[in-house]
Length: 515
Image (cartoon, rainbow, N blue to C red; front, side, top):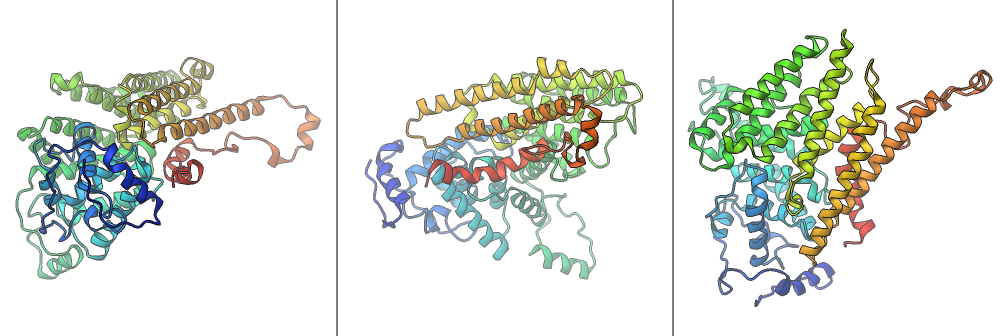
C-alpha cells in the first residue's frame, strides 16, 4: 500500500513511529487507488478532527480511520443500540453528515493502541469545548457522538477523566435541541417567555415531528444516565415522561433496525428500576413489606419478559439486562427495616442468586467479544460485585455470613473474573500481536486492590470479635479500637469502584511507559 505522507513533527517520536507503521499494520482498503475527498459542507462548518487537528491530522490517513470505523460498525455498535450505524452507509457520507459521531466511533475502536486513542480523545474534548461551549453549536451529530463517548468511556479515561461533564453536556444538548419533549410543546408562550427561551437555548426550532434518530438519542440519554445511577449511585436518574413512552412506541412501530427492539427493552427495564428505586420509589420495609415489594416488581419483570419477541427472550445480552435490573431492584432491601426476619433473609438469598446468575452469564461470553464491551457493561458487572460485597458483611438475624463467603464468596468471584481477563488478554496478544493495549492486565490489578479491601474487612471484623482482657481494654486508647469503617484501602466499595476508573488509569503512562 502506498501512503502519501504529509509533513509531520519529527521531534514527536510517537508521530514518527505511527508513520512507519502505517504501511504494514493496517489492512488494504477495498480500492487502494481511491482517495477520500472530504466535502466542504459540514454539520459544524468544518471537517472531521482528522482534518483539523494539529496532532492527528498530519499522520492519521484515511485507511486507518476507515478500518477502525468498520470495526466499530461490525463489532461494537450492537452493544449500544441507541446510535446504530446503517449497514450500507459509506465513509464519505458519514464524514459529510456525521463527522463528530464518526470521530467518536473511531476513537472507541482504537482501544488496541492507547497512545493513539488518547490523542484522539484529547482532540475530541478540545472539539467539544470549542464547538459546544465557545461557539454554542447544537446538532444531533454532537449528541450522538457524546452518547458513544460516554458509553465506551472506560477505554481512554487515562486521557482526561470527564465522564460527569460529558453526561451533563449530553443532557443539556438534548434539552437545547428540543428532543426531551414532544414537538411544539409550550408553543403558546407569552412574548417575554419566548424571548427568554431563545436567549437561553439559541434559535427557536420548528415544531416538526422527531425522526427515529432523534428519538433513539433521547432514549439513549435516559438509558446512560439511569444505568450509571444504578451502578454507582452518583448521578440522579432521569425521570420518565410520556414523551419517552412515545419514543419507545415509535421505534417499535417502525422497527427500522433489529437493534431497535433491544433499545426499547433496555429503556423499559431502566424505567422499571427507576420507578421502584428512584426518589419517589418504594421503600421496602418502610412503605411496604419486603415480600410485597419483591412480589410486585417480580410480576412486572415477568410481564416485561413475556412481552418480548421469542428471539429477544433467548438473547444473552437481553438476559444480562434483566439480571442486572433484578439486582438493582433487590439492592434496596439490603439493610432495610423488617419486622419479619425470614422475609429479609429470603430476599437476601434471592438477591445473591441473581448476582451469581448474572456472573455466570457474563463469564460465559466469547472472549473474543469482551474487548468490545462498553463501559456500561463493565459498570453493571462491578455493581454485581459491589452487591455481593455488601451481602458479605450485612448483619441481620438468620443471615449466615459463613455460607455467603464460602459458597458465593467475593474472593471466588474475583478469581473468576481475573481468570476471564487473563484469557482475554492472552487471546488479544495472540490475535493482535502488534496491539499495545494492556487494559485487561490493569483490570486484574484493580481486582487485586478490591480483594485487598475485602481481606482488610475480614481482618477488621475478626479483630472486633477477638476477646480482650479487661486490663488491656481499659488501657487502650479509643482511637486504636478497630471498626469496619477504618480500613487500610477504602471504607466504601462503591466509592472505590467509581474512583478506580477515573483516577487509577492516569498511571498508564508513568507505570507502563506508553509515551
